[in-house]
View 1 (tube, helix red, strand yellow):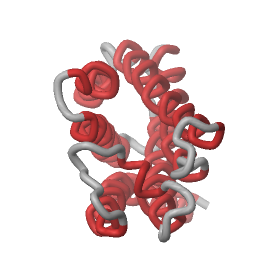
View 2: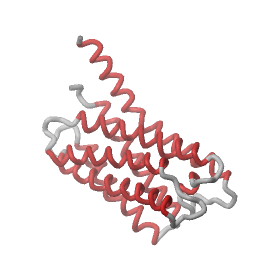
View 3: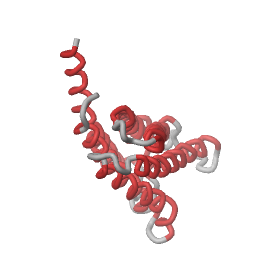
View 4: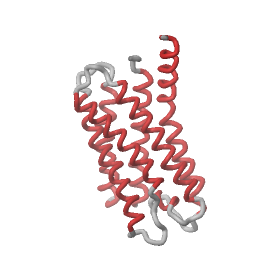
Length: 211
């Protein structure tokens, strides 16, 4: 009975190691390759979600590749992180990991609730904006709690530090940096930091002792 379980654990660890990398590649590749569909679109000035706004051609494909699949892959990493937390992790770490999972699901939800190209202030667009807000709020809160709960947990200090740093920088990029830089750049920096955190989390999970 131990062999199949051990094989499944090793497979889950390998998937965790590469899931966030694949998510980041899907996100980046779809953003770069599909921007030419919209005349005048600028990665410097415009939000990424405009590429998936309905009823623009190819919106469904973009939302799938840029938001839904990457969000699901990072959600896997967050779920494994919650599962693999050491016994020394305190309750803030466990709540934080749960919020990080919620953040990843909210990221995927942005693709399920796309913008309305004909009414950017309408109900459909506001739902997308709400998913975006849940994404960064849950991530910032979860990262802070995870870092606090992992203090003193040997072998987990690196991901605790990365979580703390990303939890501070992501909301700064989302809310403050647009006052200093073009909005498109600020938003993409926030997304990039999130993927960097996810890749590091995947490595931490893949290296953690199997239960």
